[in-house]
Length: 301
Image (tube, rainbow, N blue to C red; front, side, top):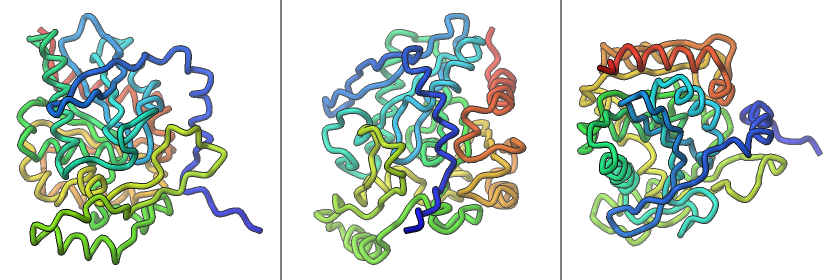
């Protein structure tokens, strides 16, 4: 039997297995509902900039290690990589949250946790893939004022965004009839079905370790991405960097400028040549470009 094609080149992340001992340990913080959530901290003692860096769909914080370490070791930013609610080693309910918008509240609570120890901290929020979509949702939402800049790495901006390939290149498979039906009910205030699983991810067996989250509920799927990426871009006032891998398997790289510029003309869109959707996180040119942009945007006194 022919093996199905891998949606991404997951082998690009295999070097992370050799870096496990170097990864920052998980630390706890408490969200407003009392839930204990976790993050990894990469300190940059000489920087007042604090970057919340969000993982993508199905994943957790560990694969952001090379990017986070690069920025922190060069004192570009203190980096915090959270395991989003519903994800990671031992979530309360894997693949689910309590309500649409809870992930944004959790990020605001993490910022408050950090600020309690660093009152003069200045914040940026960023993310990779669906984490980039969540960062944009945060930027355009009620908590957007908490950050002074946003960094989107190969961001997934929603199924209707013109740069997104069908099924995100084979990575995500949505149950459209269920989604449509639940959306209609949700619009009438009927939320009892919002915990129904509607999205699954194509992660090959050989790359699984038990920490992945292979299915999402309707409310988690909705909460990870902007309701309208256009509206989120329009309402984002802070500087915005979008880093686009030229060989991204999930997106049409050449469509990002036309898809973003009409709604946020001052966004910086940079292309990383010869890199893939996952490879961008292991790419030193991508890390260096991000560092230059952060340093140019967040001026330490």
